[in-house]
Image (cartoon, rainbow, N blue to C red; front, side):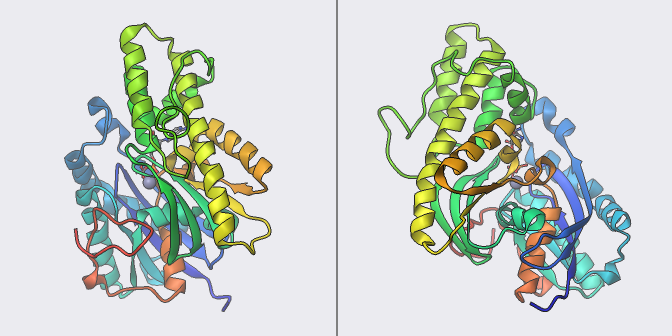
Amino acid sequence: MTGKTFTILGIETSCDETAAAVVRGFPPGPGQILSNVVFSQTEAHAPYGGVVPEIASRAHLEIVDGVIEQALADACVTLGELDGIAATAGPGLIGGVMVGLTTAKGLALACAKPLVAVNHLMGHALTARLTHGVAFPFLLLLVSGGHCQLLGVGGIDDFRLYGSTIDDAVGEAFDKAAKILGLPYPGGPALEAAARGGNPRAIDLPRPLVTGHNARPGADFSFSGLKTALRLQAQQQRLDVADASASFQAAVIDILTDRTRAAMAMFRADFPDVDMPVLVVAGGVAANQAIGAALNGLAAREGFAVRIPPPRLCTDNAAMIAWAGLEMLAQGEGESALRISPRARWPLAGKAPVGI
Ligand code: KG4
Ligand code: ZN
């Protein structure tokens, strides 16, 4: 280790947050967040009950320059003082990704800095190194609006997939359940709040793949049957929103803890020399306190430590993109800005082809 720190500007535009941040540090972290500007487009999408891609890209285009300016000003850092620029290059809504990545290319070329194309999922995955300096390897539960995966992370180029959803992502399931219950958008936080006053055993809901007719061992997830069961119940009777929210959240918790327990065994088999294994929970759903508490309980029973970044770093932000870019740059992975293209699909485990 050289002891040199890197100062990186990160830009994130892959969904409905326009974000820029400046982060300083060196792997394995923790790093210093000098600024973290997140402009959420929630209000623009709220009337539609979900993110509208065309509205998202236009909104990114309108404000991305100002958000970057604000991040540099908050950090008291000039473009010339940066060691590099990191932008989300995918996966995500391609129009939004193009806005952030093209802006980053322009900046990188204008100030002759290396540009790092960051996988949004890697941003979520490495956040616990930014916040807690978690060493490789660790077990990762990545739970967001678009993804639900369990991975062994041996390094920035070593992601081993233990399980993933076979249908909906868990955040998507929260959002759809919230819509069924008439809760406001975005649904995850609203459903968690509603669940606080409810009885988690009030409504009988399935745990797909974990129990019942399609039960199977392993670390894969399924949420679409759970959502459908809730919809059917809501059509048959007038549901108490608090009870229904609590029952839905309890089912999600049972699914997540069961699958994570299976992945813990896979992680131990993959990395038998790790004395004190760590479970990192990342992505927007990691902001859910009830899920966090359940995973803490599971980890205590299974001999794992748990690291969950604070909520504002669990949901989409650019500090995580800056940090992932920093880790890649520290490993010599800065690229020529002109050769990078956006990718709508870009799985973490296994190299994906370049291109849309
Ligand atoms: O990581 P993220 O900000 O964006 C994606 O990359 O998808 O995750 C957003 C998702 C949304 O589905 C949102 O409803 C969910 O995370 N979410 C939550 C909570 N906060 C955000 N789900 C459950 N409980 C929460 N407190
Ligand atoms: Zn995300």
